[in-house]
Image 1 (cartoon, rainbow, N blue to C red):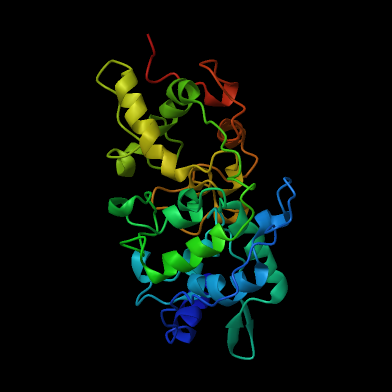
Image 2 (cartoon, one colour; image 1 turned 90 degrees about the vertical axis):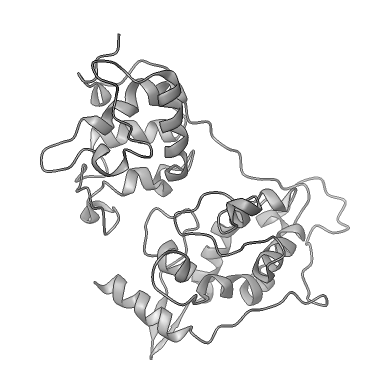
Length: 299
C-alpha cells in the first residue's frame, strides 16, 4: 500500500514536467576526449552532472496516467524489485519527492550498465522505451518514443555518445536453450498446490501447453523460449521478472502476480536452479533434482 501511495504522490508532484529539447550548446562532454588512453574511463566516460540535469528528470516525467505507457519510468523501475533499470525509491521529505545525490549516483551507475558508448543506438536504455516499429524492443512498460527523433531519445542518445568510445556494452550472458527445453519448460505445466499453472494465463506466450500425449516440438520450445526472453535479464537473476513475479513479496518478490506464488523463499531449490540457468551456468539437458518433472514425458 505504501508503494502505491508513493506512486500517486510522485504522479501528482511531477505533472508540471515538460519536454526538454536537446540544447546544441549543452555541456555534454566525454571525459575520455583527447586522453589518448585506450583503457575505458570510469563509468564509461559518461558525465554525471549532465545525467543529473537532463537525463534523470526523464525518469520522473509524468505521462498522464498510472499504468504502462501512461505512467512515469520511476513508477515501475523503483517499485518493481526486478526492473533492470533499478531506480532508487524516491525520498519523501517535507512534502517534496526527490532523489538525494547519493541515490542519484546509484541510479547513474545502474543507467551506465544499460548504456553502450561504442554504439549508442544499441543501448538497452534506448531500446526498451522505443517503439518496435522504430527498431525498439518489447518492453512490459510500453513504449514512449515512436521515433529516434523524439527529444527524450535524442537527449539520452547524445549523452551516451559523449562517453568513452572504448567502453562498449556490458557482456551479454548466453542463456541456454537446451536447458530451457529439457528442464525449464515443464515447470509451466507442473503447478504447485494453491497456485495456477502458468499455462492458465501465459499459454499465448512462453507457457505453451504440450501436444496431447507428446513433448513439445523443437519449434514449439523455441517459440516459448523467445517469448520468455523479455522476462529474463541474462546474467542477472536479481533483475529478471521471471524469477520475481512468482516469488512472495515477503521474500522480495513483486507486489502483484495474478497466478499466485510458486516460491515463498528466494532460496527455494527450484528457484535457485532457475537462477543458475539465468546466470548462464546451467546448460544441456541434464536437469538438477529441483527441475525434474514427470510430466510431460520426453521420449
